[in-house]
Structures are given as structure tokens and as C-alpha cells.
Image (cartoon, rainbow, N blue to C red; front, side):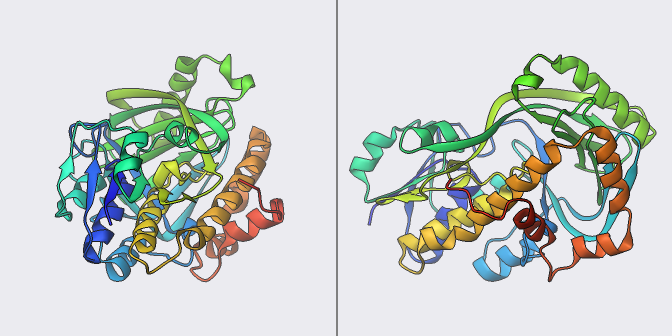
Length: 362
């Protein structure tokens, strides 16, 4: 077999590592000059979204021999609405760094790889598919997928973010659901350390949001964060992103081409993270290539998880600030908290099925 992986992100790298563990090597092509060649940001793997795998780091290490060093163990999540605040406590997951940070997950994965990565190589799928028996499309760009098959875009999102300085607790994160500055979206703070954090504002680009002043929303977000954290927010570096597509492919595999990571549709619509899902698609594609799994069967739970996540998002988008206050207040309940953190109950799956019991085609 002659295997090509286009893209050296989380999915492409985990695919390459898994192939190596089974005695195969792939040619890895990355159009940028290094892994993680983008802005620095903190992300998270929330255990509540990965049932029955409550500890993603342990799962990757013990089951797949892929080792990750997170920034922090997440112990507390604050949920803020316009007038209410609640929190959830427990072993809630992990935070980690992405991008050009020296401890970014991309760099950690690349260090576990023996295969050479071919940098500054913007190759075409058309040419690669003629030269290789198997192609793993892991570019992270849904538009690359659309050239080969339908990609059902649930929504396009606008991001405004910054690295901020202040006083933080590494094991705690803050989320904000407030339509005054995050219309049908959210904002969150994920610490890098006790003195630095990522602040992100993200909302969907629906027609009713397009006319809104992005900078005005951002300033309202900064003001709200300063009030809730009771400290001044010092911005170190800002970034902005538009037209970020969250969606799903129609077919995970066409012939011997495997769609992984964002090219598969690994971003969870509810909160916008997808690291766990991206790495799983890379592993599953490798298992199919080496003959120990069926990619289309292996990703079925991911398809259903996407469906449940999108269903819950659509429900949240319908809530006004008063209803978000009621929901936030309801979470401040030990019974609800225990249901959310219970490792044997996938509450989000149950709620997703109740909201939208029928599977979507894409």
C-alpha cells in the first residue's frame, strides 16, 4: 500500500501515528511550514460530551498508545447568563493548548511520530489520488471536502478572540450565554495558566446577526467578563475569524479516500470543539487501512453524537435571555449536576434524542 495524508493537524497526525504502530508509514503533506502554524488558543475536552470515555487522555493513552499532556485538569465550569450564574464541579475534562504554543497538542503528536512530515507542500487531491492507493483528507477545511462530495453546513460562525492577562484558576473555566453580545452563540474563558487565558466570542452568521456591529458585541463581551470575574481584562493579542463552517459530510469514505477531522465534520455544533472526535476519525481511518476496522461503521457513533449536539444547539438558539436565565438557574441544582457528571449517563444524548428523535441524513 502507498498511503498519503493531506494535512498535519490532529486527525492527520493521529492517523499517521496509528499507522506506524501497525507497521505502516504514510507520506504526510502539510501546506504550512510547521504543525500548529496558527494563533495560540486554549481548547478543552469536556468529559460530559464523550460518554462513555470520561477521561479522554487516559483513553488515548491506554487504548491507542497516543499520549497527551493537557494544560490542566478541569474541575469547575461556571455558566453565566444575563442575570444568573451557576457552576458544575467534578472531573469535567481537560484544557490544552493549540496553535504555535510550545505545548500545543499538534506539537505533542508530531513528537510521537517517526515519519517525516513534508512541509510547505500544498498538494492537489487530484494528483495525489492518482499516485497513492489510499488518501486521508485531513486539511481541516470543509471546502476541500465540498470539491468531492456534499458537505451539509449547519451554520457558519464568526469568532472574535484574544489572549488576555489577569488572575485565573487553571482548573476553572467560564462560559457566557447572553444574546446581548453572543446572539445565539456563546463566549468562554479557558486559562493557559494562573495569569493568562483565552477569551473567545463565537456566534452563528444567521441573517439577523450579519447586520450587528462585531466590535460593539466584542466590547460588551469584554465588559461582562470583567464584571463577572471582578477584574480588569488586559488584552495581549486579538484575532478574528469569519465563515468558519460547522457541518457534516455525506459519506465518510469514498473508494480509498477517507475524510477525517474537519473534513469529516468533527466539530460538535453545541460548543464548537472537536479535538476528541477529530483524533478518533484519524485513528479509525488508520484501523480501516490496516484491516482491523470498518471506517464507516466506526464513525457511526460520531455521526449520532453530531446529530444530538446539533439538536441541542437548535433548541438553545430559540431561547431568549430570560429563558437562558431560567436554564442557568436550573443547573444550580445538585441533582442536575450529578446527572451531568454521571459517567454512566449520557444526559446530552438523552436530551438530544428527546428534542430531535429522528436522525438527519447528513
